[in-house]
Image (cartoon, rainbow, N blue to C red; front, side):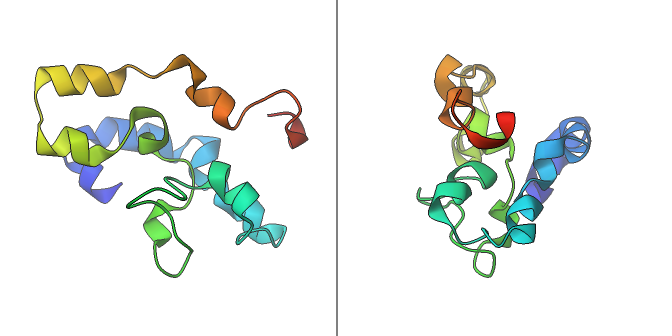
Length: 108
């Protein structure tokens, strides 16, 4: 998020007020911070190259961050063109249901 702040300060500030910017602490409070089932939805990129591994190795990838919906920032940073930017703004319809589905616990 620190690197994102250089160009997207307003969005990073908005994100920091969003409840999902702190959702990893729910796992910590419940002792689920190493549960793969939970890490899928409470971290960024779990199980993917460059994504969350564990709190010791990749602490900046905890919580739901921009890349969960918009894709890897490396794509945007490596080619900061209008076309790439437009692609990252477009969020696939099924991205939310990756974690938010009807039988999921806690009503999310």
